[in-house]
Length: 163
Image (tube, rainbow, N blue to C red; front, side, top):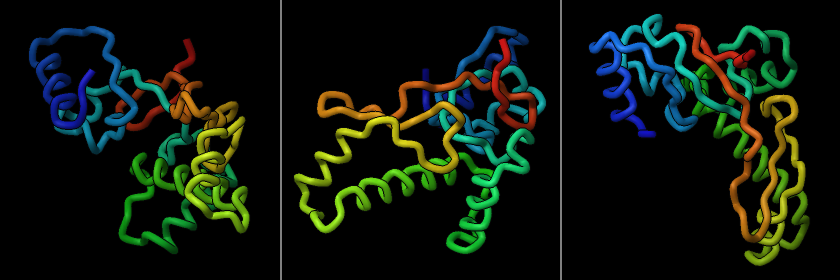
């Protein structure tokens, strides 16, 4: 387990050794842009990660209404941003969750009410989450997504691992 630069270094070293282990990378660095220093994208095929959000580079979502709305949102509010960057998708999902919390709060925007709502999410579905994925929290467990799906990098994009 590693983050950022160290993940790229580990991937690169494994390739230099011509070693072929099954490699898992954490979601936080699963953007091809983050680990690009680990080698040519085609050389990265086979990496496994996990995810909870739709990837704009996965052809399975080409005609998905949520993806189309996300892409329109990116054009309008972040025209200089890369819509294929998974970190932008994460920001979009986070904004969806914040919107849910604020709408649920209504006129009571007190700190206590916002914390109460945010720490009691139950099966909240926001746009760009993978099918079957919902946000759930409790006052003793703030991990928003626990039902991650396994994904595999094919050298160009992440797709659901079908094994």
